[in-house]
Image (tube, rainbow, N blue to C red):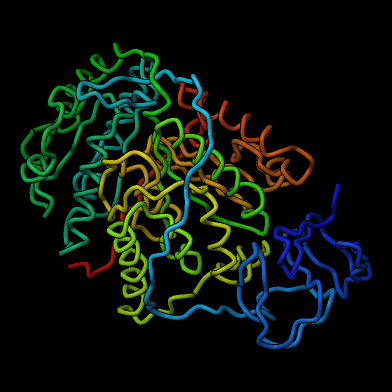
Length: 495
């Protein structure tokens, strides 16, 4: 097995596959490179002398410039490389050919067909508070119903406490309402009880109207200040919902109806080499079958945004993508924060030195398909194909936004590992085999074999089969452990 990988022929760095020792020599395209110090796995090595100010090239693109002269064989990291990125930019639309030659297949999954024609991959009972004041109530109700039923006939019974629904203004109030509305419309739930207090800003009656058309048999309401015993009343409603949902059954569904969210977190130097390209291949495959994928975490598009802009189907979508990027930069500026305060300490320890490097790896998750739509935070998917979604990089907030857009599951790549899960199945894909072996209770699928000799064709076929199995009902680790939560984007003041 190779000890390093050169991703693109024009790169002036290579990435260490395993930890390398100072004094080791690498044979790179007929040249011997002697390492000047130890280099951790996932980190970069200079292939030639780089002058101060000279661009560092990885993935065939600049990922920053040298802060000082860098010698051949030197470890390249955040101490000797600096971002090239600036503030708000002007962009021009230079569309590229996004035609892909991917054959159709006859794969299906077994899903739950809902009354409105939508399909879910889970059949769960959800208890959703309109306001954080009733978090204790919804948790108690969920625990009681789980004890009574053992969850037989449904996939899970889950309460989703949150901190909001009152003392919020403007966009924050609307963000809360939109995410909770989106949950009430999500097809992975076979029954939903919305629990209000009665005096909150997110008034239950107004929220009910905000839902628009919904299945009144499957989505019920309870206002705790208006009943004498909220536990008794809530359990009466939940037992009815449970009886209805437990009669649901799976039926074969075309893969064209599957919607997946694309997310990464705790990235490392292998993210853009193994797991993210795997998701890109899967995303292109799913879209070729008529399905949908959604890419978010806008701050981690900075530095690679033109690659997405030029894949937009038309100039209107290009303009929306420009706003997606620049509006998020303006948000940083308005709050007197640096636009490029990224990557995180964990990213740097894993081998990612600049935001360009992180973004060039991050955006590989969406493959090479055309951008079909651009969604604002809280918007729901209306067009099949690749969608871009406005949300921050924060793992919990972004994953919640993906689920709220209508994604049936979130595909989450990681090189450092994380146990969390949002309110839909959250598939953890490791970038390296060491993480997969060390955190077998967190990681669902290992993409690290891609640098150990497995071909992308073989790996992607295994991954397709695994995702179909999850859509058919196979639990992810976060589901088995009950790690389920929501996080809502907040930008303004709290009263």
